[in-house]
Structure formats: structure tokens, C-alpha cells
Image (cartoon, rainbow, N blue to C red; front, side):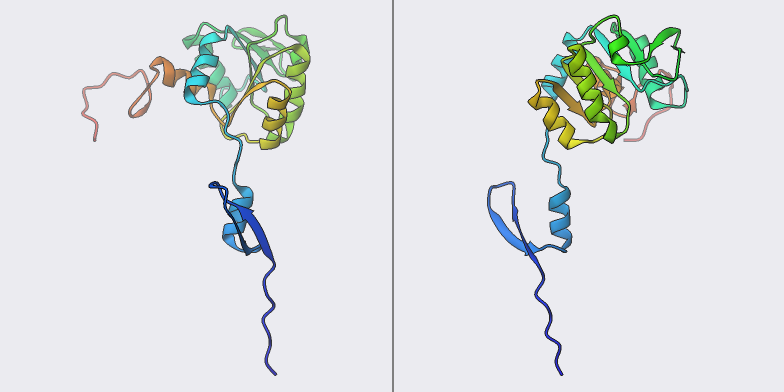
Amino acid sequence: MSAVAEAPELETVTLQNGLSCSIPSSSPLAKLLRSKRTWIGPSAQERLGILRRAKSVAIVGASPNPARSSYFVATYLQQSSDYDLYFVNPNATEILGQPVYKSLADLPVVPDIVDVFRRASDIPQVMEDALAIGAKTVWVQLGIWNEEAAYEGEAKGLTVVMDRCIKVEHARFHGGLHLMGFDTGQITSRRTLR
């Protein structure tokens, strides 16, 4: 008795060049193509423009814990930029000597940039909150990705930057990074390897 191999289920995929082809649905390539990010966001030049035009930044998910990345970014922005900073966290009262607001709606101003340190699943609600107060730009921090929320935010008129650190981008455009990475502020006569 010979066993006849069942033909794999095929899936039609569209490639970036516009051509389409059929491949097995269970193949690694099909899985990769399904997971591929399609949202792009603002270019480097556009991000520079966003940062240059901004006067105020609200950090949603700001933490008073110095070990958290939001604290590190807030410290950098406080010391290395002219932005008016507003911290949003319903569980804190003060961060870096400044008051903390429970929500974006509680802010005394409409921030130019809403910088977000929240889970990817929280991004749609933060975008709705930003729209409700009239904010124009939502900047979702490095490592956080919600493509559907980015498309929806843009469709509603928001400028969306996602999966990029505002500190790194600011430092990149303002001389705070060098070829070896972060500017540590340390002066040394030790020769670096090339």
C-alpha cells in the first residue's frame, strides 16, 4: 500500500515588486511574509523636522524608577533639550522634580509630541487620548510596534513615529552620538580600536 502525500495548502503572496506567487502556507517564507512590517513612518529628515518644531513633550508611561528607560530618556531630554516636559503616569506624583499627571487630558497644555512608553496593546488608546486633546504627533518608543494602530492614527490625522527612541534620534541629530555609539562624556587618552 503506497501512501500518497497530501498536497500542501497553497497561499498566494504579493511581493514588494507587485508580483504574486503561490507558496505552501506552512513554509518558513510564507510565515516571514505574513509577519513582515509594511508601515514605514516618517523619514529621518521628517523626524528631524518633528524634533526641531516641537516645544513640548509629554512622556506617557514615565517612571520615577531610574532603572527604567523612560526615566533615562526623561533625564536626557531634561538636560539636553529645551523641551517643556510633562510626565504622565497614574501611579506617580513626581519625576525628576516635576509633577506627574494622571492622564493626557490632565495636562495644562497640548504637547507637540506624545512620547509613549507603554505596551503595544495600549498604543491605540494612547492615540485616542492624544487625538482627544488635540495632539498632532505620537512617538512610540524603540521596541514597541503596533502597525494597525499606526495606520489608524495616521488615518485620523496623527503623525506617527514608531519603534524609535526619541533620545537616540535627538542625540543623533544634535551631536550627542558619535561613531562609537553614545557620548559618555568621558575623556580618555586611550586609543580606540578601529
